[in-house]
Each structure stands twice: as C-alpha cells, then as structure tokens.
Image 1 (cartoon, rainbow, N blue to C red):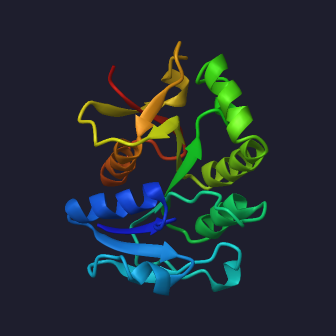
Image 2 (cartoon, rainbow, N blue to C red):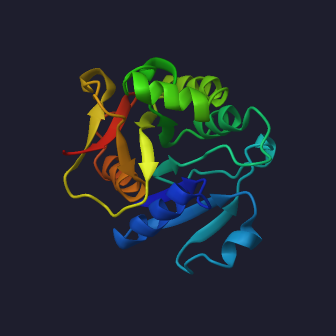
Image 3 (cartoon, rainbow, N blue to C red):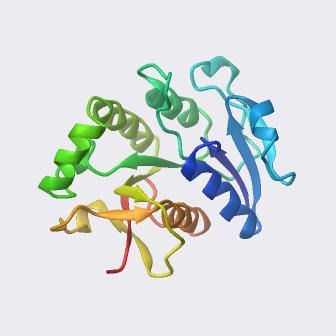
Length: 205
C-alpha cells in the first residue's frame, strides 16, 4: 500500500513513517521543508513539499491509497493550521486518517473531569480549532482518532481503536504511548473498518 504521512517531522509522524516501512508499505513524507527532512529520512521514503498554509501549492495525491495525518500545531504556527490541513486533505479525494485529541469537540468530557481540566489548562484555545478541523475531516468521510495523553513507550500488542460511542469514561486520565498510537492508526489504514467515525486509541488494562 502507498501511504502518505502529513506531519512526518513530528513525534507521532516519524513513528508512523518508521512503522509503515516495517510493515512493507511505500511511504511518502509530506513536509513543509523537504531539505531539512531529507537529512534524517530513510532513503526509501519519497519526500514531497506540503505547506498547509499555502493550499495552492499542496501536492497532488492521486497515486496514494491513504493519507495518515499526524499534523499538530507547532511553535510559530498561527491559528488555522489544523483547519487548513484538514481542508487541504479533504480536497484530495483520497482516504484520510486524521489525528485529533480526546477532550475536543464531541469528545469533550469523555476522558473524565480531571483529564478535561488538564486539556483546558495545557491545550486551551487550540481545542476549538481541533474541533473545527475534526468536523471538516469527518464530513469528508475521514476516520478521526481522538488520542488521549501521549507518552513515551513501545508498541503495545493489546491495543484497540474504540468507537467514541463505546468508550467508557475512565476514573483516571487516560493515556497511550505515541508508538502505540502510530500502530493503531496504521492498523486502521491496513484494515479500514470505521470510515467517517471517531475512534479512541487505547490499550488493554
């Protein structure tokens, strides 16, 4: 399968690229600065410039089976980067897996009261933009992942993508490793089961 990764320079994006290669997929890294990424990229990765702030220059993706977005809001990004990214991808007529955040939009409160308070303190105004970007992605039929708190760690074998409607509000703030999140997004890319839905990536307790 041919997978494009938006946000390939980020902590989750790099893990998605690495794991996709291990699974035997052909990978395209969509990055703002190809020259900077090329210095550390695997030579099996095709690199294409993709600046969401310049949608007119966004590359065509007709040769791609699925786009996995790990796009985040980086330092220096003004408001609107996530919305611009969602709009750029949904114009491509390609299957999209979009990374969002548990506690934004329709999943507000789903992680429990303590988790939601932490989200408001540390994510704050970005929650509104995340929710708007999710709406755009969902309307176009994307699968949206509402990831809980992300931590360092390996890939957990006992993992699953839980539909938001079936997600039970936890007592303690939920979390998952970035590596496990990457694996769960690729699991859905390999075996699409929930297009147009919100999934919560989790591990068995």
